[in-house]
Length: 231
Image (cartoon, rainbow, N blue to C red; front, top):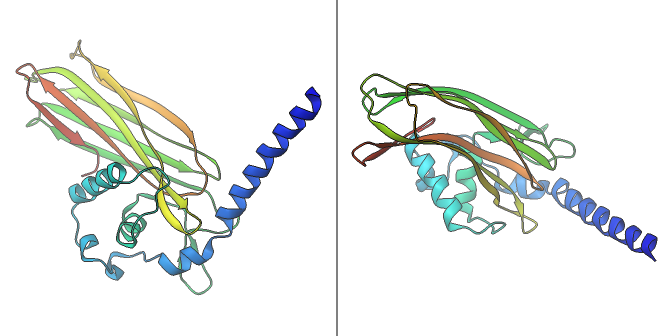
């Protein structure tokens, strides 16, 4: 009886995984219909001429407005397709960009940054990374925060955020993962605050991710300010 139950569980798990992979790998119709990369080709005014800060805020809005696996509107789909900083894409023979194709589920993105904040009181630098594969993905960063002379920091909160967008509802695009790596420092600010970490997550059909990093400083007077890696 135990062997039969074990076989049944393995069969169900394998069947579910196979169905998920097939449903994602056979979705080119969605890509051909909706993909619209290149800001010069944008249809919706809300997606045109956005600053880096507006892009960051828009991703934050999407992640808080939609539930996991809830399909985006066409306007929001166009936004993600154009402004995500890691994309699984394939160029077809016709020159069209298609994010879905058999065996094309792999992409890696790394970008460096170097910022200052608090009127030069801190230096925020390093790099962030996002990796997309078929089922298992990862993100993280190698980041250093230096506290310069005259800083008035009482707490520093460092985070690397990652949102993953993939096929939902058969032919739509939506949030399939939203997470972060977080670290806090509350003393010994004569030494740099560093983060060197990667986080794995599982999600089916990831084709776009948006990854960023942020340092939030609380001063000795209780005021706060934040610096983002990309804004």
